[in-house]
Length: 428
Image 1 (tube, helix red, strand yellow):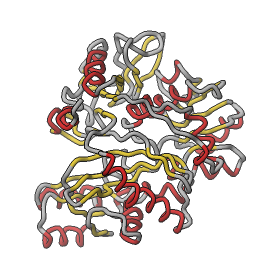
Image 2: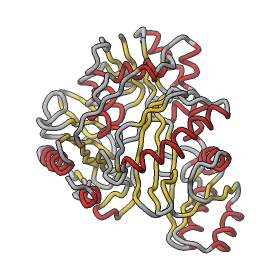
Image 3: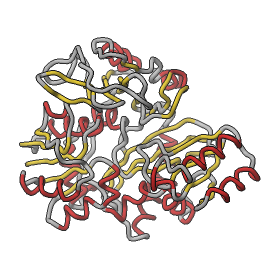
Image 4: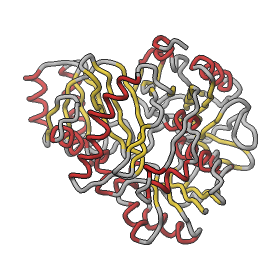
């Protein structure tokens, strides 16, 4: 099969490497790809992941038997609809279903309508009303969310009224997230342990993947600015079998059924961002695709051909696929550019990688790199996702950090405490 993957980050590299393991994958293409992906797939770097016409033209040119649309933007724009109309098998939800991530207002209203546990919230279409509500409510921390997509950064946790007022004005008036801030959601701040659970679903059957834990803050001890994710571990030790059963009954199945009732059947990877509160598990957010960098620790533990899964979902036959997982742990440490998530340099040479962009003992998923003159150069804020597996979480973490130390580029930065909270809860 000729398989085309849309996207160019660490998540897409993890998908490409997993697809590369499949006996069904004859040739892999990627739009636009990156330096690391280029060592496993043919990259068409002059077409953007959001260019629907461009991706369609590539799919036709390479006679793609399957197109995997990985990022949120093209999914929300309706890339899958166009590809399906032209007869291409796809992995990823259509536009009607992708709204579950594309609009926070939609997803919150969906949960309210179908009694899916989530944080209490209010929706606002102008800054004045939102500020008035925050002043009268006077409960902090408070969470302020832009309605639309914002590269995973459209959420501001305000510690007091002044911060909340500034958040509302920044999103709604200064438009720091563009049109995504035309509406906002203000919700209660939930406390507990965060868990990410990615699920395969064809709209009838839902198969949860191994749970994971993300680390959003830029600095150790969960300090610094929010990022797209500085590291992950899997499985998440706080996500017990009992909690998994509760989530399946009260959150996963009800969400899939709710989308069906709304004539928005979801097919692809449905991501549940959960908070395990003293009052049970609650949904923080939905994503309409594989998480990043959660995918980088979940897929190495998958022991079933991912192409078989993707084709089964497209053909509404997920119930016929037996899904197997390795009884191991995985850890991912993100190596970022100095200054990320704000200003940072690009074009810096990365040392320590072999000609495949790898180091012995780890999966190095490239997030922001390019390959020029037989050298890997930095090309983004999050540069590399250094992932290792082990029989225990500690083993995986030790191996990942050991491999991080083999790689170097100017002003590189990474957190030293990935998995520390998980180790506290883990008997491993």
